Amino acid sequence: MSITKQFLKLLFVSTLIVIYSYAVSANNHRPIISVFSIKTPKLNLKFSEIMKNSVLHSLSEKNFLTQDGNKTYRYFDNNNFVRIDEVISNNAFKDRSDGELILFLKLDIINVNMHDYLLELGAEVYNLKSDNFLTSWTIPKKKILLPSNCDSICKNIKLTSNIVLASNQLGESLGNILKLNFRQKDNKNIFVKKYKFNISGLNTSEILSLTDIVVNEFPGFVKLIDKEQHGSNYKWIYYSSANNFKLKKWLNIALKQLDLKVGENIDLNVNSDFVVINKYPKNLSRGSKGDPKKFN
Figure 1 (tube, rainbow, N blue to C red):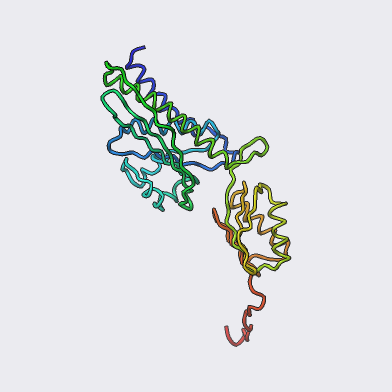
Figure 2 (cartoon, one colour):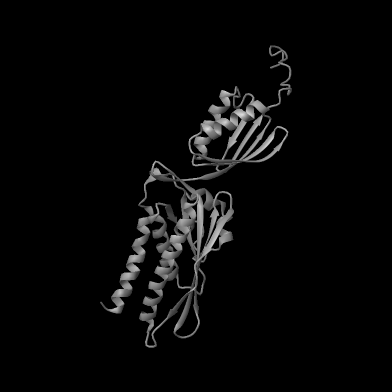
């Protein structure tokens, strides 16, 4: 096979890889990961795409749900050279994106001399909804030595093949890191979410009963950390594989068991990361009914 055909084959394969990122069962309840390649004017866009597609493939092989973040982001900014701070602060993108996690990939190709190159690959992971930085990862620098008679086609093939290999290594490492945040249930890996609970107004009996229910009865429970307590104010960190919609439904049921009805004597607010439970004070007067026949 000629060098040109080898090069075209590598490009074709790297383009097809992205298809695998969507071939994942929807029953795994995993978060969708928006994957971005951070491009710079000095870096060939083709190499950035090859890196991203290889990482997408590695993550999908581990049954992660992924989407091409750059493609989605083009609805809001047609600039090929995205920056991390621009993406995570773009509320319009957050509203449109299905991703819960966002993965930024960085690639540097350093020309040491005419025939020597260094590859540097790294990644940063953020919680898209809360803008929280979660983790970062880099792989060891990879040195590429080109033959003395290597022309531009030869150089592209060498760089492409090494980027694919290094990107697969990066994707494998990222997949292993992210899997640490998953638990096994019925032979499926379930994503573990972290919820911050703020609870106020419950008496000792009520807080003990609620604790027992969310720990021993709620499906998907992983861990509860009692962070703070000041009087009747409590702060928890609650880890569960349940999504926020199910958690809200179950909390409504649990509070009813404690004779606490949302909207009557207690407030309950649940979003993607936070849970706020606030019991109304008993001595809070609702005021006189007055004379509705006279004053209406």
